[in-house]
Length: 107
Length: 242
Image (tube, rainbow over all chains, first blue to last red; front, side):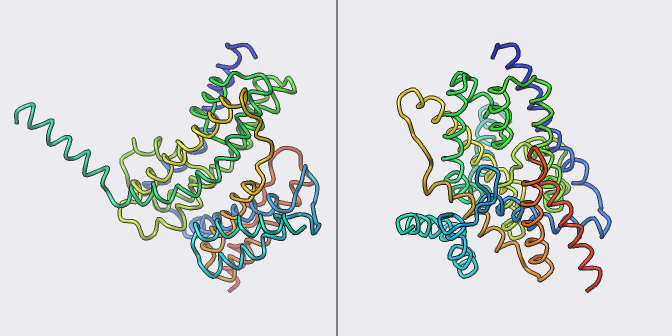
């Protein structure tokens, strides 16, 4: 890729990445929001996390991967249990890695 | 005040800021994020260099753009010979979900001087957002916590993509193996920490299913934003009926 094209591309990517990140914070940060909007926003974290999580364990190269060989899917269950019990990021991630490694040795 | 005194008091202020417990807590909470970024950043760096970007260009993209999935998509598109405008448009779509994250964060990062927001906003990612939302409530200086968290994660991203880019010529890493499971495991625990009501469980399950459905049916990374928006509406609807 030519340098000038690369620079234009990066500049464009910076602008379109920066605006959605900054605008809502700066516009909404100093303003009272309607109750319904606050309620809607309060569901965003759980919704985003689930929307990121599901494809990361259930899809492989763009299609559904439902199989005992899908180590990430199998490791999901003990990791979920550990997360529920500990509510601790470090313990869950370390435990999850151990489950994943163990399972990939078995299957 | 003499110049020297001024300098000493400035230094003390800086030290106090750096010693702030909220800032330190943020830096500490970024460690699992960095562990998750390592395999992705290295993979991104290797891919970009293999597709013809220089290691410096690869690292520059991480420094200025700081958006993992958009960067990976951009590399794929460069390889396919896509137009610069198309790459920028795609980046916009992939990162649109940050609108929601940023709006949601604004419930916590309130009433700050305006010039804070560009810096805090630049650091909004899926990961920093998710960790912040589960921890911000208890923090005294929320903006410092978020800055410590986001900036440390940012350094981790830049470092891991540079590592991937510069090492590609020497070592072939192959697949990430178990490290591929770091981010899913993190999403799991953050989700569990996030959920405090029955309606949130319903929203999460619905959002996951929708995300899968859209990933399978709609071209381009629309699934996250579509699923999130619709599932949050469902949440409002079922709370209204309770």
